[in-house]
Length: 238
Image 1: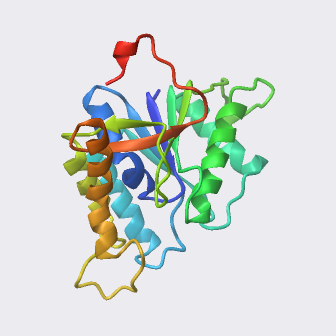
Image 2 (image 1 turned 30 degrees about the vertical axis):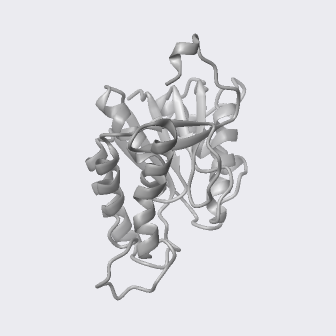
């Protein structure tokens, strides 16, 4: 299956938190979208791998994601080396996305910045003919995505552009809350964490509202880029 957009996350729930509204909007416009999780979040304080697996499947269904795979890299300990790059190159060549979206370039969790650079480097390497890969015994064709974008996570990184997600924020939040083991629940007996706080839960809306305010809409999500943005006309900008 060829995808229009392939979103990567170091952990299940990264993609939903970073760009869930954007993906829901693109799917509504007819785009075919997939998610690749690098790890199963097995070092997470709350929940379990089995619970996270089900939550990831539920969130993907809410958003309308066409495919979701997990590369089973080690949570906290994966590195940006040839072995890990080849796993991602195989996925890029398998799904041939026009656009790749990945983790924040810098963040509180060390896996986010690592995952960002790992995916970005792999997107470039995937276009090199002398790197040969196979999928299920078949030689793969080279493929390099046209665009690589990075969503924003814990840190308030200034975005290079924002996407209006008015009309899709509710679905975004619903997909995030599919990860019931991870976020605020006053009746939970799980240990307290920063992302399980009431403040973090409320931030799901107030960050999106603030970015929306700045562009004159209700809700928005921000992204950073690796190269200059280009438009055909000044009127292409909102």
